[in-house]
Length: 109
Image: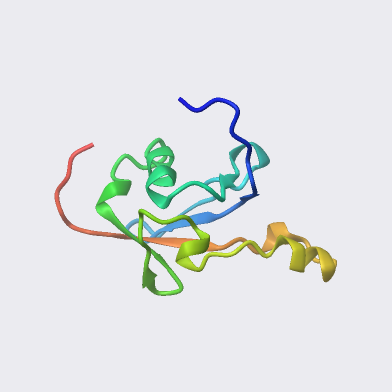
């Protein structure tokens, strides 16, 4: 457990699961923001409470497979909050969408 670490930046993302055509606003609410320091593997661990088979999915952004050992920015998922603020736009209407594509690997929950 890490004590005394500070959050550099947080941002919201939405995860779209393609197997069921479902839509999950994961980590959209303020109390569930993604920390910029978190790897996608760490985000996956938290996402398991929404989908216990999340490890059986390929995670993609803009059609490219994500490297689960890297953080969002290293996967070219950037925080556009400042730009939205400058343009006086509501940033809640645009959140980066991570697409989860099911891999038929027969894992169990």
